[in-house]
Length: 386
Image 1 (spheres, rainbow, N blue to C red):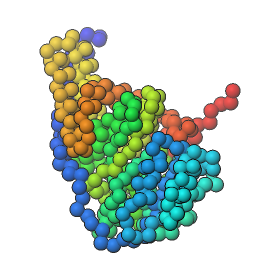
Image 2 (tube, rainbow, N blue to C red; image 1 turned 120 degrees about the vertical axis):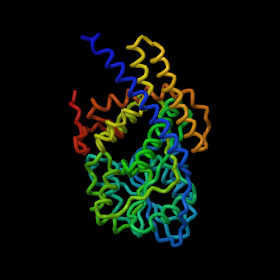
Image 3 (cartoon, one colour; image 1 turned 90 degrees about the horizontal axis):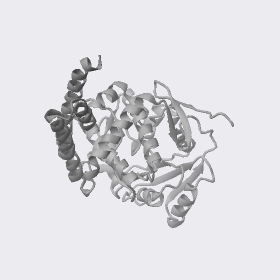
Image 4 (cartoon, rainbow, N blue to C red; image 1 turned 135 degrees about the vertical axis):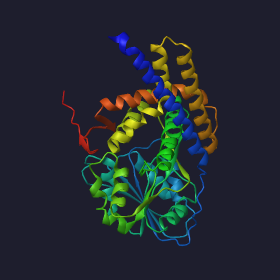
């Protein structure tokens, strides 16, 4: 029986590998066309409230938060930092930021609301009652930005029909092999895939790196309370804004997302949660991402085919086409190309995570475990007492 289906398996694997090679070259073209610049210039500077939900004091947190505090923005800016626990290590970091900037409108709030299924959104719910200004900008704690970030974001939000602005991001690792692999997942997989999806009209993203909207828009979509149960709260917010007839704009510049992973288990847990989030957001689209993994399918086809000329050529082609994409990403992002040699290992790990995500419904997030329902909402998993 196995002998009868082996030729079909070989053919299927090699076709998937060839399709993945073509996709990688298309993604390289999409990256090449991405200029990283945006023509929008601010002509008005409305008052802005920046929300920063925090949990823990990850490496470099002070500098990342400081990049939002030190913006070249002439309008009033209020920054609200939120934690769920007064003993959270992030509190000391925020206290230092406030002490360093006595004239800035910075405030730390400890939420008294129960954490709920999504702890980040629960923190945001605790902050939203203190929002004073017309424009609300939400950004994850692991993001850092340039000094003109706020002015460019506000300028994009001012465009006709725009209800929300979100930003693409790239990975910036700490000095660690696992963090480097994590940043490669963002740069070599996430970013090109999003650009291809946008070019083909298949993607409707919204990212936690930046969610900027008018305060009245936030109120129209039900405030943050409406998103407490969602794993992909950023995507749900974007869909809610589209649901009231407004556009989600993605400017052509990139912010930086810190990758602090220092062990394989940290990397595995984060990427599996990320993959499970993507599968919850778009099951069909996530299944279609099978074509983004040419190297594993080339290896599978070659192993079943006795590593003949066809199988060996497929492996070489897969590595070469992925290398073209990876080098183009590095060129577009103006980063060092010294990580290219990790490309095949990164591709194989991405495939293992992709396959595992179809068999996992429980994810770990901020020290808690959650079960992901089919609609993308969360249920806290209570571990049995010993």
